[in-house]
Length: 427
Image (cartoon, rainbow, N blue to C red):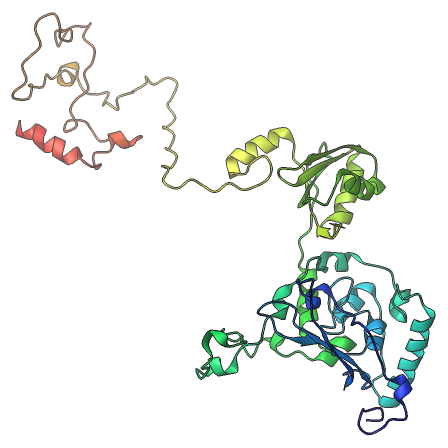
């Protein structure tokens, strides 16, 4: 290589010397106290092949050591992290970001053109204030709807985990718990995510992670407005402790006049009522799946009317705040409603056969042995079987015609029904 560390020394004025790396929060780690090693001109950049200062550190406990892979010039040209090569603003691959911003920045790949392009970019970076990207990326719009939907707002520290132990996969690892690598089953080798190239990620071509995210963006759900035109309230969830009333007002006032903003701190949500339905629809369209305030991604949904909220909450097992309630185990199911009766037909409350005669229905049953009859005047009133004042008596279960079962107590197959029937026949 024309600018390698060992072969040529005449071009050292283009070698990079830095005091601190350009890293994302995920690669830097969750520990605020980090010890880094700095090696001046330690390796060649994997993009421009120029020697640069290499930083190496451990992002946390039980994590693998990480180091910078590209120089700071290549990092500033694409506005990416020096280690993971993901965008510093959205945490997305370069291919996804360029697709969302409609940017086509083709970095030359040949040695001579790459060196010339890099020198021009360094001159542009030196003349800028360092707060905005350079090149085609600096001329692009700041964001897009797709990037706001896919942007990662919180660090993903699982990306810093150690690699899988190849000796453990073969059953030959003898370190046990002291092994610094992961003892887990490897992923499918045919998985496209298992074949990643750092150069393809930087140039934004053939990136399997970017392809997966672009497919997810094409299948994302939409928020359709409710049919009830009187609803002009939006539900905002996931506020946390950092989002205040003023933050919500400063974002949603641009869509129209706001009547009220109600914050429920206990549920970490808010209800924003607009003056017109048109303003609420515009706010829902511009904020669904892409509302980020103070570094938190917020949930945006349509509110519900008071009547619909009560009915649907009871019917579907959803509380008033929108949380789904789990069913209580062990409760019996709902009983089936009784069959509809004709208005002209008399009500048959005892499931009796209307063709049976009163004499059959008033059969007196003998008392069980050992039970004396009640004294006169204390028992139930006795009527003659053929008297018109005698109330109808229900027949025993053995003489009752089969009918439709409405409640469990009328089921002859339930537990104890056969035993009682046999004891009655034995009498």
